Amino acid sequence: MSLINQNEMPFRTLKVRFASSFKQLFHFGWEQALSCLFPVVIFASLAITQIVSLPILPRYDWLLIIFLLMQWLMVYFGLETKDELKVITLFHIIGLALEIFKVHMGSWSYPEEGYFKILGVPLYSGFMYASVASYLCQAWRRLKVNLVKWPSFLIVVPLAAAIYLNFFTHHYWVDIRWFLAVLVIVVFWKTWVTYEVNGFQHRMPLALSFILIGFFIWIAENIATFLGAWKYPNQTDAWSLVHLGKVSSWVLLVIVSFLIVASLKQFKERKSI
Image (cartoon, rainbow, N blue to C red; front, side, top):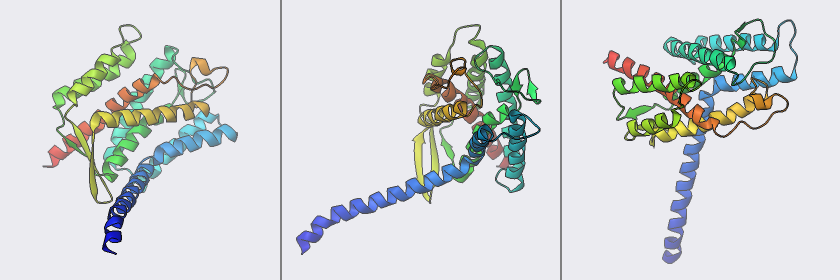
């Protein structure tokens, strides 16, 4: 009997560990899903308005109204704070500026009609960038994110600015995205992000989190283009998969987003001390 029990012990230990890991994964997925509430509304709205033709206003304008209403509801019900709203609004402006430039350069287009457009770019497009900031703010709070060995602001701010400006300057000059990517790895080599899931703390290299978020945004981009949110030149006649190389662009954009959110969070924490 004792021999049987001894043989069963490793199996029971493995079973307990598996159950615990599955429970952690479930809670992590649930918190992630809650943090993605705004992006989910965006994709649902894109899908519904693609299938159902809404009256009076063009589709792009209805999307703007829906996203504005959703943003108001997020703040009204306390899902986002007023400080987070300021960050999200900043991302809306940053994203809209980038969209106007990229559409002007022919990188992609918004072929449908709309009253609320600026230089061919519908105003709702800024919310797709703002939704990334919304996710970061939500996940930061829900998972109790903390940064270990965060670099100096004197390094972080110029790096974020350089990454953002490269989205513009590479049309006229050398594309230095890979140099910037290497620089990010060097700067954040020792930086870790810690997060809490169901009372247990975990950690991950910050650079790895950039890659994972960027990859999932690329997947979301494929869904968005399929639903007609915007179109790349090669998708004009028929939808096709967005080139995998776009992952690098999204990773860099995620880095800019994260650096802005993290810097503001760090600044607020220091101010409260």
